[in-house]
Amino acid sequence: MTVGLILASKGRDVVTIPPHRTLTDAVQLLAEKRIGAVIVAGADGKVLGILSERDIVRALAAGSHVMGDPVSRYMTSKVVTCGPDSLIGDIMEDMTSGRFRHMPVVEGGRLAGIISIGDVVKFRLAEFQHEAEALKEYITVG
Image (cartoon, rainbow, N blue to C red; front, side, top):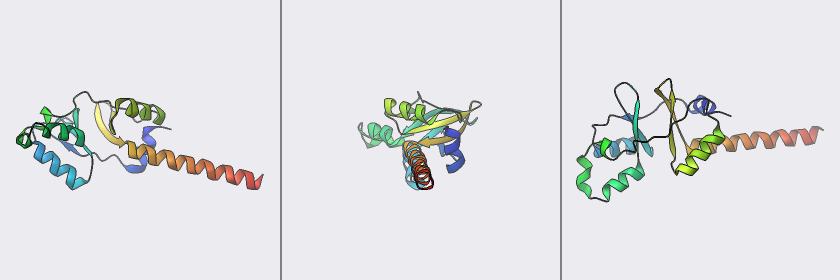
């Protein structure tokens, strides 16, 4: 199974923020959209970084004065990405070993979507349920 199947189900909409916007702007955006991370993207749509709730908490450890600073100062700039053809098992492994919950999907050098660990878990649970139902049907018919 691939990331493209998750995107086909959930959609390809991604919330982004320019690198010059402030942490306050990012916090308001996260709260408004009820999300845990925002992609920091350039005007050309390229992924420059990702800013998660964890990144914001780390920034706040220095004091509330950081809220006027640009998101580019606190974002994670070494972003692990995947493509629509990436396998779900590989994504699960990357997220677990890297200890992150959001992964941008890039296609042709441009942002094409985002998946979260919640999306992956939901997909896998649906997959397991479908397999269980198929086995039950096989047993009762056979």
